Image 1 (cartoon, rainbow, N blue to C red):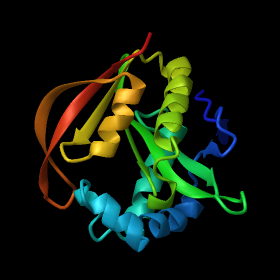
Image 2 (tube, rainbow, N blue to C red):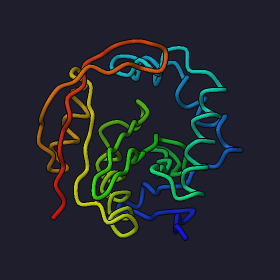
Image 3 (cartoon, rainbow, N blue to C red):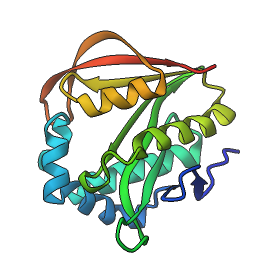
Image 4 (cartoon, rainbow, N blue to C red):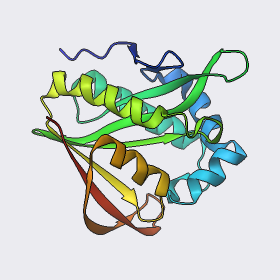
Length: 186
């Protein structure tokens, strides 16, 4: 049986990771479609264009089903403390996907108001630590859009190195270039 705790604590007291719930998919939709977040995401992520509640619901259902049935995906939502009052809110998400053998891809996004707080790096390290124990992974791959300087910085902080480029098609047919970064775990 797979052990996906409801919460993964992190060393950062202003961040914890929460397992997604289908009933909370509207929260994910609102986070992604919030104007500043959506504009930020659309710069390098074509899937964010015209993101609908149905997309959020479908994404969340697929992740929850995969986690429940032992599939190849694991996702946690980043719950960050507000800078003013310390209440927690959805700050982004981190996903491991295409898990095959000892490798898996990782993807993440962080909302504009929570950028530059180290959340993507900390969340990536924490979910990989958990997945390493569950799945036995020793290599993590990051497929980062060529223009996404912030995610390239996170990849470098994680110790990943850039490798080959490839063309990718988003769900709505947009084509864009990504570079694979390879993070070898000790």
